[in-house]
Image (cartoon, rainbow, N blue to C red; front, side):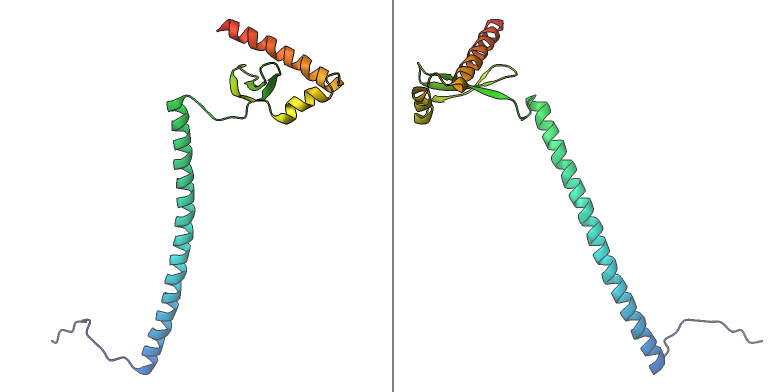
Length: 140
């Protein structure tokens, strides 16, 4: 009795089989390129998301370590024409933010029309601010 087995061995391909392999290789190569592009798009999206998380974490860590944050705060200028100084105060804490010499235009405005209604309202607002500043300084 003869025993037969099956074994993988090298076989010569005919022209049709070579053409089928070439067609399959072209399809697979195209699919590979598409998958690599898709991977890049997905990876890029995740990189952007990760970078955003890292940036947000750094901002929060800085806020925690410094116990400070940069925010828009309402401020008001106080003009001292005797000292020729303009001072900018925070209206939440009444702390001095900035101090500078009056500009030529600011000095001239007062000289041009000291009785102007707008100037009177500004002066009253300045007096109110001065009172608030004095109260804030007294609390310290």
